[in-house]
Amino acid sequence: MTKTEQNKSIVFIGSECYPFVKSGGLGDVMYALPKELVRQGNDVRVIIPNYKCIPAKYRDNMEFKGSFDMDLCSDGRTFYVGIMEYVLDGVCYYFIDNEEFFTAGNPYTTIVDDIPKYCYFGKAALAALLYLEWVPDIIHCHDWQAGLIPIYLRTLFATTPLSSAKSVMTIHNLRFQGIYGLDHIKYWSGLPNHVFGNDCLKVGENDANMFKGGLAYCDMITTVSNTYAEEIQTDFFGENLDGHLRYHKEKLCGIVNGIDVETWDPATDPRVSVNYDVNNVIELKKENKRLLQEEVGLEQNEDKFVIGLISRLTDQKGLDLVNEILPQILDGNTQVVVLGTGDTRYEDSFRYYENAFQGIVSASIMYDETRAHKIYAGSDALLVPSLFEPCGLTQLNAMRYGTVPIVRETGGLKDTVEPYNVYENSGNGFTFDRYETALLYDAIERAKDVYFNNRENWDEIVVRDMYKDVSWTNAAKQYMDMYIEVIER
Ligand code: ADP
Ligand code: GLC
Image (cartoon, rainbow, N blue to C red):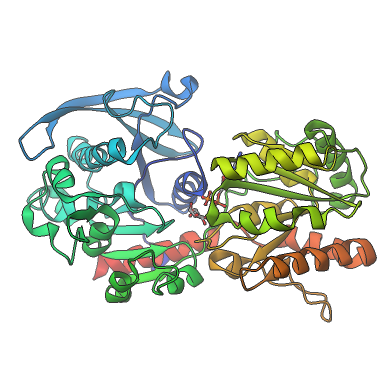
């Protein structure tokens, strides 16, 4: 039997999962990777909090699996843990229920609330597995919110049946680490003193860092692209954990994300105005463009070069560069359509541009899944000029929809978008390396030049992008190989 033919049991634990609750790419991965691993024959279940913001159509149809009281804090304070179940696309989801912690509309509120919330969630997830008497081979923890789990596993749960499981931590974004006062985290986690040393949870004088602790204690660290796996070991990208990651580099590897090619399929996508495939994309994209222009208030003209931007509006995403050069790229033949929410300064600047360039720039300051799909389908190019990007999914969605990515060569953007080569007529998109406005401007100009002056080559990029394999099939196999290596260690 080859490695990938062995079936394994894996639990995914994290703070969000599409279609229940999603604020970004983590939610997409928590949905699509388990689905693919199940398709490949494994038993994969997912645990997330039962937030109040999960739509009623799911909440009302969850099955109650049981409940118990769990001691959490260092003074023995106990909390209710309810376990709800919902099965979707062959994957079993467990929702940890507790109204005290999960009442807010948004999964993340302030760090003051989030620290106790995810101390509770991590321990409750493990306690729920014990309650359900399901001991998986692998406990796969995602981002800082699940950071305490590998530590709980080897301390408070060390004498339970769960101790036979191996733990994996995936870094989706090192920017967020769950740092707060050490005494506070010690109180809420109820973890023993010895895990609060400099090699594990402690940072600075008196703080603890939940991600750092999890990275120290887990059996394997993965991150969502090979380039980001290298970058985070450097000072610039390491977010003060580069030394810690270099120390643990023997157990660190990168696996590039895929996307769920069923949800993201322009041929069947119910959110897209006119469905299309690789055989009719050139004609039908124009129709989608016209309908998108109408919907978002842009001048309806299929000859315009439409650039989409779908993003959390934070400094990670390179929006300072975009803001600086936006007026310059509006040459009379170009339109820009933005969809995003986030920092007020970016929301305001895009609103300003929409107002200043009516019919030419559109800014939808909102989170809207349907509009996102329409922008992928109706734009010619998608801009992702990130300062850093662990993987990035929007460029993958774009390519799947025949929309040409314009990206900065960092993290997963570098690993997934092959630069267009005019001499060989190869590549998937337009790229630039240093984080400079002039270079972003130049990449957009190069894209426009091919679009307006060499349409045949442009159309070939579109078709190449649609043929590119952006599915989870291969990446899921790499995860399986990694799981099996960890299990057999
Ligand atoms: P990140 O996780 O850093 O936000 P990714 O590129 O990995 O970035 O994933 C972003 C995901 O969120 C994509 O599926 C994208 O389509 C979606 N998305 C981002 N902003 C919005 C928005 N305002 N409305 C709808 N979908 C959005
Ligand atoms: C994070 C990263 C993004 C990545 C996503 C899913 O939110 O910012 O680059 O694609 O996680 O792994």
